[in-house]
Image 1 (cartoon, rainbow, N blue to C red):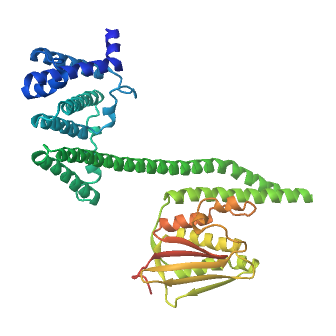
Image 2 (image 1 turned 90 degrees about the vertical axis):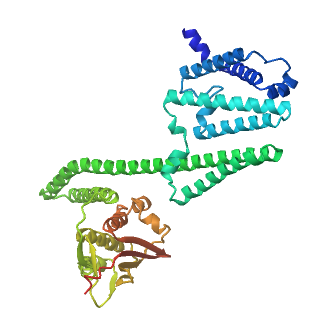
Image 3 (image 1 turned 30 degrees about the vertical axis):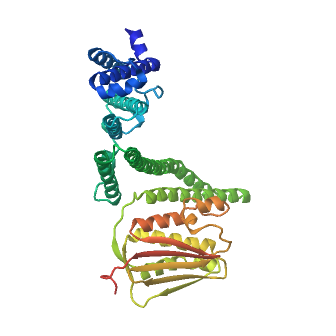
Length: 457
């Protein structure tokens, strides 16, 4: 029993059974149609011309064996003579099988030459067997509906969408054209050529739909992988930062204790000071990492309220007054005479402002001005901060808002490379727009919020 099953799965046995079934089908048609028998007999003579009952018995026996061999074969194998149907859209295969049968019947009806009639007969038989084999294989694998391209295509692009409507018009027009050609010109050579061309057009439309579906599937898969990667990165940063923070807190406490010890040694005082500075910087970096992770994924609470943009800018500028003076910078603020309100989260906006001002303090050319502008446009309120960079800016504005970009390019600075990224993420989290403009050495940060007309004084 095992050897018979193994033999049935052989590609050579399938090919032999396929040819045997073709001979039975040809003999049965010759027995049923005198005209068909007359013209094919010019080539075959008395070969493949058996009794009708014998012909049908051979045909059904061969087809049965073929179906059994397909049903018992391994559906996961990627090789074999009859694997083509696994790659053909099932609905298209049905239509192509019917079209080849129509061509064969039409040629027999108009009594064309025997060679062409036999060729079309073989194509019709091959298409019919391919359709039967595909049906058996898909029933075995329970994938019949999954191989119909048009059904998922119209689920993704219904008729009321432009691409769905266009494909519907092309499909309906192609089918109508096939119908008209069949009843008007199929008997002529031009009609047969146009009929075949229309079938290939239909196949092209089907596989164009399949291509669109594959693009959509690839996009969804890539988008899902991107979301998962971002989530994994955020969780990794959060978990690692949390695990590092616990021992770091103990280190900071012991460093503080070392600094309080009454040891009169210059080297000891210097080393303890270095430890204190480095642990403090590491703690700030971990805090920035956790905040950047939460801000980038939107995993932060947002409490919206009306805030005076001019007032909060003045408060932040006052906090950085000594830092500006220490770096020989002059701060100027241009603002409207009336109050400018925005609806946002005050804590997040304050952190955004602090990051922007801190960035200006670190990287502005000494003995220059830092200029802030606060105003309103037609549909929004804005805040901008401009400064001259102390080093040439060889990075684009988009690059500067990425994570760790400043830390990657200038490891000797105290920055973590997360300030602008956090500012951008927090601004967008609260409904605002954050953008940078780089013109030569001129660096400008621009923040915009929707205008709060009710709250404008």
